[in-house]
Length: 452
Ligand SMILES: O=C(O)C1=C[C@@H](OP(=O)(O)O)[C@@H](O)[C@H](O)C1
Ligand SMILES: C=C(OP(=O)(O)O)C(=O)O
Image (cartoon, rainbow, N blue to C red):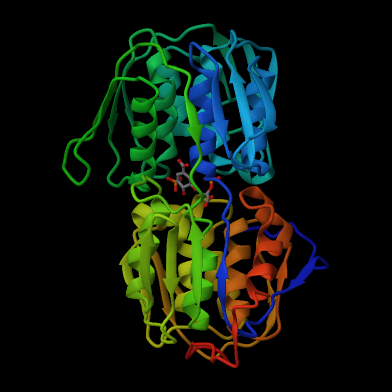
């Protein structure tokens, strides 16, 4: 959780002047956008991506694919947002890929590079060199790829693509990141023998994200056998075959809806997220259940999701292993609740943008909280909190979690709010606009036993 950012760049988190009453248009899903870009690049024909997320992670993905020969034209979508036209081409090196600190770019693209003709160099932010990649590197080597990582098992590295990859059966321990599985599955149809992937690890985080991968592969025409989730089977099979170009409209990013829904919960207000899908593989859909358990209620209609707080914040005892990326905002709400929370199943968060368990404990405790790390999660005992600097460790979800706390705790200054550009560049403006809504009822109390 090294903090490389100077503390001079501080954003005063606004307190909620009243119960929020707002409609928030949340931009497109990072996970869907970056999967769609990879699948489109591997297709046999051009495709469209409508309302894609434009953020640091997705621009890095698009630029990396362009560096390997894919054409991506950016246009205005007639129904709003942008439309990206993706025109696949023979993938080739030499190329350099900047992964930034995007797990999706650093894990999903090495298999694509193995299919390219030529050398593809991977580099990125300092933190990207610490995040695990061995599952992808070892698997690709077993499937026939040549990779020069100077024995590190992590970035930086060069994939020496041979224009094709044998493929076949491989064992992968993906207990440190589900993205190892998604990465190999996404390129699997283009391997000569397809792919048979057996997960050997004791745990497998973020299953909904793997389900999203399988779902999007099938919609692109791939033949995929997936284990019954929740069962004991652990083998995925992808048949070799062509991927079809699609015309896909990207759903709003439901994980990025978390801070806005949390605002309804914390202020006893109401927030509507238009376009919330009725059926989705996004893990953020679990917020409907999790935040209802924490004291709110929700209604899902054809217009979207309306979530209302009750003025009361209940603690949460939950295994968040499926939905790890929701943890920082949930932890912020839990720190304001009227009882002790226990969040488990999230040891792998130590390997995310920063060590999220250490960072959340340190920053909440610096404001007067009582948070301890457990072997696989956090124990959060609400205490009266006071203002102060909330360090964000270049982690977008630490920054949005701090904004949630700031609604109820005066004087919180968020370091480097601009780090939200990883997945939600408009965050600060959306937040301010949400709080300025004329529908707000002045004088409504803000919930939270933990605030000062
Ligand atoms: O495949 C994806 O799009 C993601 C998978 C998850 O990664 P981990 O399994 O490493 O947690 C998640 O946390 C990340 O934000 C996005
Ligand atoms: C873990 C996350 O990102 P990444 O795709 O970089 O793994 C996240 O967005 O919470």
